[in-house]
Image 1: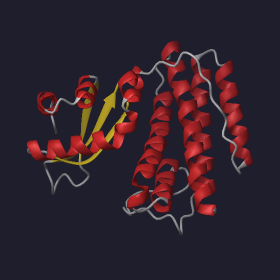
Image 2 (image 1 turned 90 degrees about the vertical axis):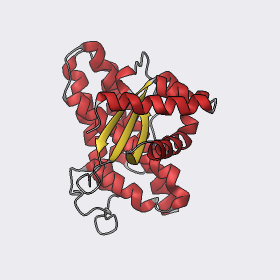
Image 3 (image 1 turned 90 degrees about the horizontal axis):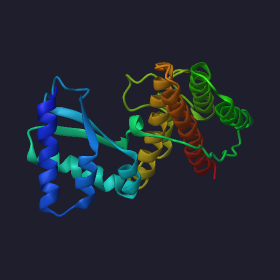
Length: 249
């Protein structure tokens, strides 16, 4: 496991490389992010292999979002070349714990699925009427319901088969079903960036719902995570609709 000291050293190495190359983008992201290393699934065979998530504060994340793919690619290469550690996958994402949404303005996505359309409206209306922790927790449950129903609309087990047979894709595993759906329908190098955006959106909803189910019962925190649940859920619906439309066309 990569300890705090090694984590700090890796960030320092990346920062020094960025400074030498006069890269404002990398320097700002590193200064405003926390790095979380997770052991690779095949860590026993590759003990120096890790997956990396970089959580960045909203203002910096939004500022450089268009450079997401480039930043991930260069950061992965630099760690692999300059340290004894091997990064297999890297994901640069928004640090939800730093997110504050003071006012929500969501545009509902019109889809071919009537039940999804109705549930979207219910989700947004629930947020507007919410006043306590129980209300906010119910929003997380509604988000989970929407994602589960959305997965059942598009996922076909005979067609959408995960690369890893250990991944469970039975009904109820909406995150795995949707990610497998996206991986299948958006396969190939030309779809790599769109595929990554779609997968990140799906994972964000799942993480948001998990947070809501572990609510701290602090109204301000609950409200922010409830808002994030709504925003990310609508975003996934939009992404899946785009993929579905492209498949049907």
